[in-house]
Image 1: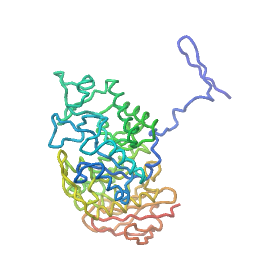
Image 2: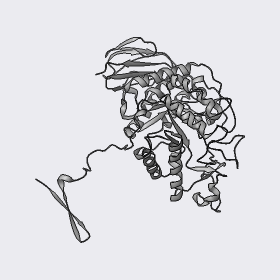
Image 3: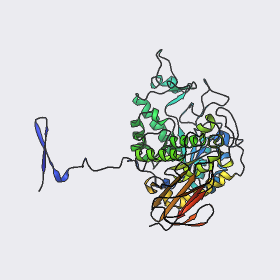
Image 4: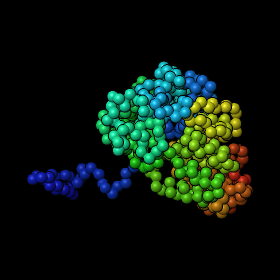
Length: 459
């Protein structure tokens, strides 16, 4: 039986066949409509502070580290802003990367456009990808746009240029995205670097300060050139629908810091994931981290923030749903706050944290349960008998499964589990010990310790 629906339009009527009705409002639809580039499915990401990375502070000097980073297991190279830095109202000797003087030029301190192109090509030749940090919300005071297009900026109550309201960002002034010309200019500037330097996407600074519809359209324009990867410095669902592949897991970082400071325990970690995994849309990738340029510069070193829980926190950020971030120098045990507005070189040396990340990245690449977005497995809580101390979960995809047990306490813990997904035969990843998990199995985890149990025979 064919059903016809009569819709009155003005003085006329439109008949729509029920058999051709376009959509069922009761059918669930995936929230995330962005198509992640295929190469991001098992990717890790690395933030590059070019100024502090080497004595020279240049693209060419950094490029010498690419083979080391490839061996470490890095896939995506995120370059902090590469543009010339404003001089008017500059902070410190060198100024902030995020006070952009020219959106279509390279900071001469870092090298030339050809140097940047060479860096990108070298990365691509190693099957790595490069994204640029993009500052769309504001510019330097002496950006030429202030003279050629002053109407592209917001103004204070006196009609003057202003920093982003309510923030102590005295070295920048705020753009006005109510202006269509600005939107077109910024979109064309984003496209320029993809076309000119063959970069693979962007990290968007304070992405939530900018209207989401701007990002939605810009993503379409960029994807029309090549599949790109977009990272939002923000934490909001709507940015994932049509614009961004990944956003920051700020709350996870802060929860793990709270554990070290005694404000919460393993139950607080459970609570974090109970909220995040229930409220967050499927296939929206979160970026997990224990350090980045903001945390290092303004909130002390990773050692001070995480204390004896640092390694356990690193293990969680690399095995939980999401993509793990590694910041410049972490792998060398970066134990100082890097100057944000001046030169402050990283000391490169072998360090156990680098070894830990290399092992975790290798596991992520080969075990599909740990892949990103819908390519990977969902986190499944595995309740245990010591919930204030032990956080335990499993992830499974195809034949791969991991069972992760982390002790967020300062004492050894012996625990047993009340679930079924964890049952089976595993290899503990770090010790290579064979472990058979049965309904009666007890596991002992040292203080601040962890076990990552890996199975390649999941059903």
